[in-house]
Length: 362
Length: 255
Ligand SMILES: Nc1ncnc2c1ncn2[C@@H]1O[C@H](COP(=O)(O)OP(=O)(O)OP(=O)(O)O)[C@@H](O)[C@H]1O
Ligand SMILES: [Mg+2]
Image (cartoon, rainbow over all chains, first blue to last red; front, side, top):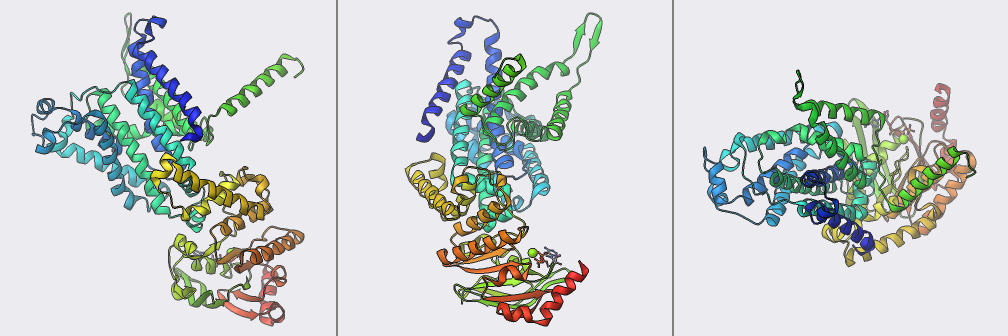
C-alpha cells in the first residue's frame, strides 16, 4: 500500500471531510436548512452505487466476462445482512406467517461481521454459479448469469422459513451512515486498485484482451475468471448489505434485472475498465435517478393534472444506455484512470485552446 | 528427443485437416514446417499446444504424454508459441505483455497481492526487472510503457516472440513470424530467430509459407500439403523434390 500512501491519505482526508460536512459537523458553516439530510441520502446512495459499479466493472470491464448476475448477489448480501442484524423481536414481528428457522431467529451480530458475512455468502454462491457458467463465453455467459440471478431471487422468494418470501423483511436496523457507505466504497476501491495493479490484475486484463493468447502464456483461464467473479460478487454482497440497512426494508422484487441493468449502465457510462470512471458515473447516475423521480410522480398545476408514469425512469435509462453504447462506447473514461497528471494535461489543453480562440499568441 | 508426434490425425467434422502426421524434434534443432495455404500447418501447432485434442495419435514432450492437455499446462511444461495473426494484449503496455507470461510462476497468493505486502512487492520487483531484461534483449526496452497495439508491425512480431520467451520454453513454435514482411525484413527476422535460438538454447519449429525464407536457417524442412507430409529432408533435398515443386506450382496456378 505504501506505493500510493500519500495519495491514499489525501483521498481519505477528503472522504472524512465530506462525511463530517454531511453529518452536520460543518453544517453551521453552510447554514442551508434541509440540505443536510438530502445530501446525506444522496451521498449514501452514490457510495453504494460506486461499490456496485466497481465490483461489476472488475468482471465485465477488467476481465472481459459479460456477467449479468449482480442483482442476485446483492440480494444474497442484503438478506444476509438483514437476518444477521435484526434482533429477535424485530424478526418475530416480520415472520408472522411462517416462523424463522431457529438458529437464525435468535442470532444477532454487530453490523461489521454481518456485512463481511454478506460478502462471503454472496462470494460462495458466485462460485456455485461460476463453476458451470464461466465455461461459457460472451452472450452465453450473460444469459447464464442472468438466469442464475433469477434463480437466486426465486429461491429467496420461496424459502419462506428463512427469507419471509414475497413479504420481504422490514425493520432492518438503520446502522448505515456515511462512515459505513463511504468507508466501504473507499476500501473497495483500494482493494480493487491494488489487486488490478498486481500480477493477478494483469492476468485478468490479458484474459479480456485475448483469451487464447492468455491461456497460451500459461494463464489458467478458469481459475482467474472464477477469482474475478468471486471478488466481484463479494462486493456485490457488501453493497446489497449496505442497501438493506439504508432502506430498512427489502423484498425479492427489488432484486430483479433492472437493478443489474442500472449498475451495468453505470459501468458502461464510466468506462469498462476504469475504476475512477465507475466512481464518477455512480455519482452521475445516482443524481439522475433522484432528479428523474419527477417523471414518476403526479403533478398538479392548478386544474391540470399530469400523471406520473411508474417505470419511466427505467425507460429513460435504457435509452441512455443505448445512446452511450452506440455513440460513446468507451464511456467517460474509456479504460483510463483519472490522475493528477491527466487532469493537469486536460486543463493545459483547455487553456491553450482558449488562448487560441482569444486570438492571443499561444 | 524433445518432442515426438506419432500418427496424429485431426478431423473437423468431415474435414481431415491433418492426417498421419509423424515428427520428432531433437534438442536444439530448428525445423521448418512449410506448405501452401490450408495445408494444416497451424492445425499442427494447435494440436501440439492443446488447443485441439487430436482425433488420433499421441504427442509426447520429453517422454511425457501431453496429448490433449490444456494449453496453459502445456505452456508450463515448456512449449511456447506465437500466432499467425498477431494476438498481443493490445491495450496493455509492452512491459505488461511480458509480465503476463511470468504470472504462472508467481508464488505470492491472492492475499499478498491484495495487500501489496512485502513478499508481493519483492516478487513484483524481480518480475519487473526480469521483464525489462528480456525486452532489452529484443531491443524493445525503449518502448516498454507504450501500448502494445501502438507498435509498428515488425516490433509487434518481435514482442510476440519475446512474450513467448518469457514463459521460459524449451520448445518454441513460431507461426509464420515473417508474414506480411518484405524480403529484407524477413531476412532480418530470421537472423533474429537464429540469435535467440542460440541465446536461449531453444528448439524451434517454424511455420513458413515461402520455402525461401526458412531455407537459410532450418536444418530440416517438413512439407505439408492437404494435411499430409509430402516431403521431408534438408532444405536442398526438399527444394528439389518434384512433389514439393508441384504442390507449390499448383497453388500458384490457382492463385
Ligand atoms: N477449428 C476449425 N474448424 C474447422 N476447420 C478448421 C479449423 N481449423 C482449421 N480448419 C481447417 O483445416 C484446414 C487447415 O487449416 P490450417 O489453418 O491448419 O492451415 P495452414 O496450413 O495454417 O494454412 P495458412 O497457410 O493459410 O495459414 C483448413 O481447411 C481449415 O479451414
Ligand atoms: Mg496457418
